[in-house]
Image 1 (cartoon, one colour):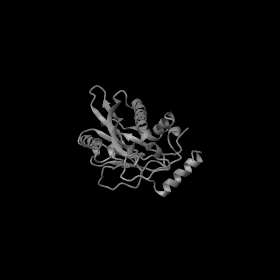
Image 2 (tube, rainbow, N blue to C red):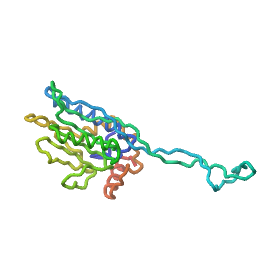
Image 3 (cartoon, rainbow, N blue to C red):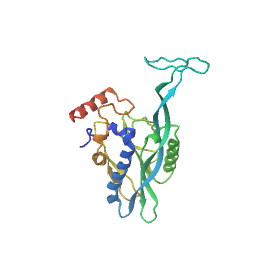
Image 4 (cartoon, one colour):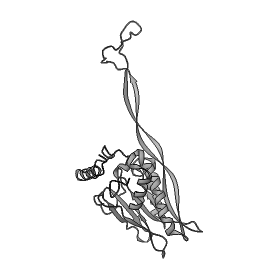
Length: 263
């Protein structure tokens, strides 16, 4: 079943499916690129690990100074005969910890020399979470690329997190594509992506004088969505993961889901 939305599906941002979406999207984009690149270039999937924050619930038993007991609860005497409250079971402690998430970037390299020409990054939550080790590592990697002779294409298909500041304020949009060409720096090309429009076909630059190749983000996401059976994996009866949508977008998404019989 195809996605209920023409553009990015915010339900794919859920932690339990995003790592899978990320990996499959990288693979599909590489498959699009490869026929356009040969014989002068190749597209390589380069794996790396980010660390994502997850919230875990730990059932605990506590012994408070004062307990409110249900009928039939037992109060056990302590040494010396004093009564002590029975433990209250089922209290949940919430803790956060980092878990490794496997991600992949696409590297376009020149055949023969294996020189790096273009990097395509599909941002992960950790890339956009200030204070995390992965945020700082990506900041260093990004800075090094922008100081090099390598093109950088960033696909930001996550609403949550912090985006890198630009000299010009970004328009109001949930998702973005950023392209930094070597010969145009510090200028960055920006594609704002809205829910109601299909994802764009984006140029991928190579070495001058070779012409750009392209990636069709809409076609790639559609293929990934059907292959991953995400209709069965996304919880379309609840709200999408945060941040909260504005009322207009929330109403439009709800209408799409009802039209498709998913609500």
